[in-house]
Length: 185
Ligand SMILES: [Zn+2]
Image 1 (cartoon, protein in one colour):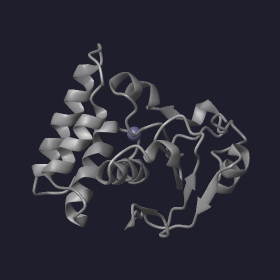
Image 2: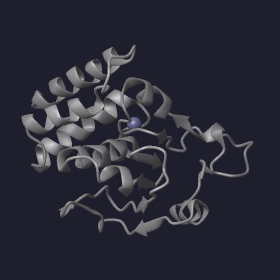
Image 3: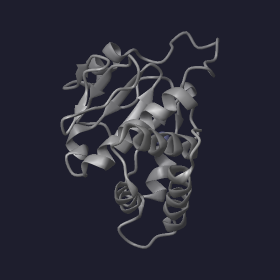
Image 4: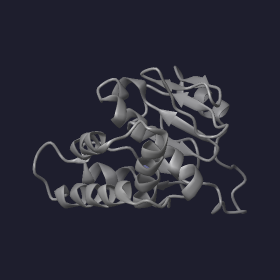
């Protein structure tokens, strides 16, 4: 399965993140605001995506749970796609989560991936902003503590040294700062 939407609609952060880490939450982002009128076809709906992906399941908005905890992003549905080439992704109006990969990470990391993709829905394509949104939301909602932040840091740190190590470390530092901020970005 590949992205259905025209690449003109998609700002992919997957490449950046993949460089930065052994697969951090990222993938596609895009928020239709940059849609070009010349293109007849807009981004897919959750139904179109699921149909195209094959084997994907749609969870109605508000019903998704991760290890028993509610993972809600407004009214947006969540498409479960075990074939997605990342842990999670965001299309305008819905989120995609990969249950196969998510099964390998801890609950705080799962929740953070979801919240990161949700952050793209509310805040746009910027990765650092989505990271910050996610950890601050985790703090507010109570599913993230300092230990959880460190689990996320371990998750986005490359398993082995690579040229991208700095990127993962940078994201991590930014998230630690965000987590400690009293205000909400
Ligand atoms: Zn992202």
